[in-house]
Image 1: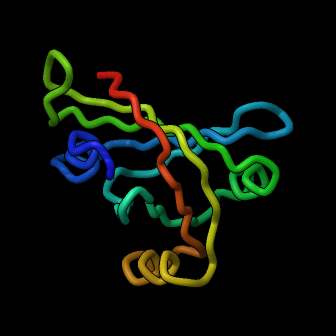
Image 2: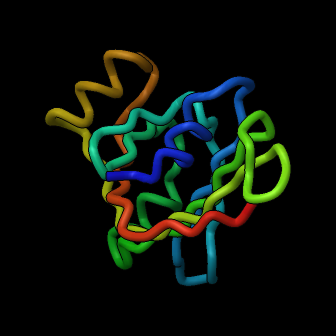
Length: 124
């Protein structure tokens, strides 16, 4: 189960950026999306894929990911504003349950980025 504070960050208030880092031949590759685009499904985060071409290529060779997510409206460790680093594995699905959930909400999505969260660290 995901940390309740992380769920609060993803589902509360103003939209924040979520950063996804994959490992590629030229080093780390970074893409961003919005917190409000995330569908929480147990320990998986489902994210619509529009572009993410380099991300998709990187995941074929190394499926590990690092994410950074924050929300200024959620109480953090000491002050208002909370954030997490998330570590896990990912894949892109273009059919199946995860894709169905994403395409239902985001008609423009060509796939679902399915991130299985393995470890979280609250940073803020």
